[in-house]
Image (cartoon, rainbow, N blue to C red; front, side, top):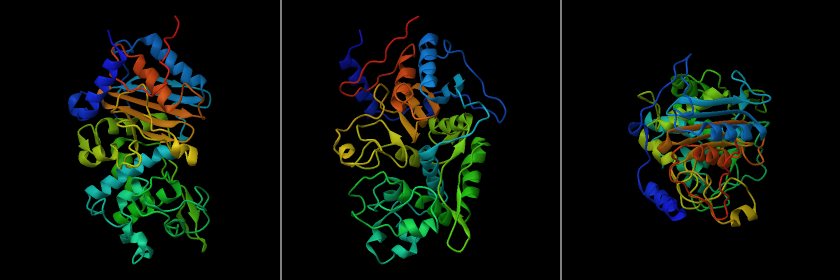
Length: 381
């Protein structure tokens, strides 16, 4: 008989063990035009429970839901406003794509290391306290820069200069703050490091190798002189492109035997990057330890740490965007779960959908649960 103590003990053991990357499982890799499917029963699911989990997510505002096991599509369902050829904004789920591109620049020697000062890319920081801000601080949300007065979208003027001028309100590395405007500096940093436009580098290093043919990575704005400049990042892509990104993540940074980003960087990127919020890596969210979500404010900061994916294994990690634009990866179970749509109120939340899919497995892996977390109900019929 499986008890709560057994489940938690299993989760603790998984936390101590290395993540089960591609070498521990055999994956199917889609071609440019074909993607194999698998019957839910053959893939190790209770078909009725998986169908109920996906239908609940569709009812809860999802325009697309995809469940892959070991690379094969087990369920692909589209709701109102969705479709196999429909591209949607993925909001901050795109941060994780920028994380991968940062790792590519490190692999290429364009960024010396994550300890390199940001002042090497933003010269206005040289000789100031901001010179202590490293690349790692920027991708772990611990730069110490203030986001007050900085616009997330529709920036009029040179965004790099505007955001780089943000006040330093905390010594770098001493405070975790989910800071999207300051994160936008990473587009400029990667482009300056690579010596080419961000879009070109992203296409060559990430999009083309994965076959993400329907992904658009950059919005544009104009500076005070009317010159076109990068404005803000908001990835726009279809569900299958997100699933391709998830498959690369499931492969630990590789795609069908080809290294996209080094496994050492990717492992660090999807692990706790600092002690201030152990649920955050390098622009990725993870479930290895309790932490806190992106919500700002004193109440959010004071809330007790929680596993972001209660009801899921500790090796779960994800690219998460506003209103539930999510790519969730569970290496130990060979799972990739994609969800797009409008803001969910329950079943389609990042934790709710993932937990429901896990619970629909014939032999669910060990999972963690937060205090007071309800069990996933068994569907009737």
